[in-house]
Image 1 (cartoon, rainbow, N blue to C red):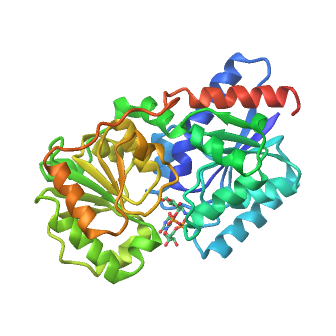
Image 2 (tube, rainbow, N blue to C red; image 1 turned 60 degrees about the vertical axis):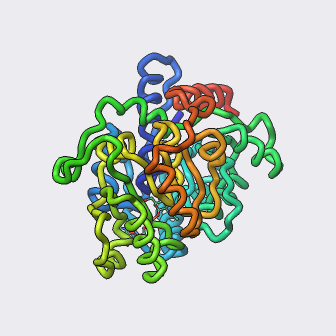
Length: 366
Ligand code: UD1
């Protein structure tokens, strides 16, 4: 029995790390080993966006790298599809496991399904209801053709049921990103920028913005950064910038408190998130990590596909409303913020549950 584990972009690496570790544990003990092939699409390829994550998160070197790299959505997606199809023509797995909502997820899901391979989706059922997000399209299409759904919340189960998926296809297992966080938390370490700027626990912010809607229009991007800069009570704001933002960032040189740096490693970034006064972000995964770590989190989007981070977590939606941003940053500066609780099954055992299900299904030839 062999499964393909698809990954391509930074958040995928964080999600597959504990699944691969759990498969290894399983194979050491079980009479029914589950072999696997790690297929890296090459969507992220910079050392800081890819190799460093494999090294830190102890993921074995990918068995296959499709080396697709960047391009428009259609170009990137179609290149991945062509190359993955070629791979499947030479050897087919019994199951294809895709994670998250990036273009690599969508591309390989379509190819595997059309090749008649069973398809499992980790982090299924998330819905922002914002069809302007490419990730929302990726989620909906992937879920519409998957056979097995691994979810992070009961809310995601509900979404899938409403879309006609059957109850016995859905497994509420928890969150693999939290497996990774718990496994590596003792290794979180201070980045250089922490020493260089004499940062202390709770006296700085972390900022990540990379969504096209926030960063591609230079005037809006500049306005957003200025608003954050002037409302942060003169605390430092660490901004590890995604490569796609660097061109526009170079044109903005009026920022006083925002310190832009290169993409950070997982262990350094999580150290910063854990100890920050607050996180300001447009990423989805970071809202989950902030909720788990009880770090206040402002999301610069109008919607979220992860409602539990708002309902019981430390997250709040700001959208592009400057008055809200000002009010929330003022609350944070006064130490007024909701206390977050840990969502159900975000307990470090999610990958164990996933491997158990895969084992059962493969053994029974389902
Ligand atoms: C992708 C995901 C997004 C996720 C993000 C995490 C999709 C549709 N989006 O967005 O959901 O939050 O990853 O990081 O899949 N680039 C580099 N080096 C790299 C990778 C990218 O310089 O290693 C630059 C290129 O200019 C590229 C651009 O970033 O064109 C965008 O990369 P891409 O993979 O298309 O999307 P992300 O913005 O990274």
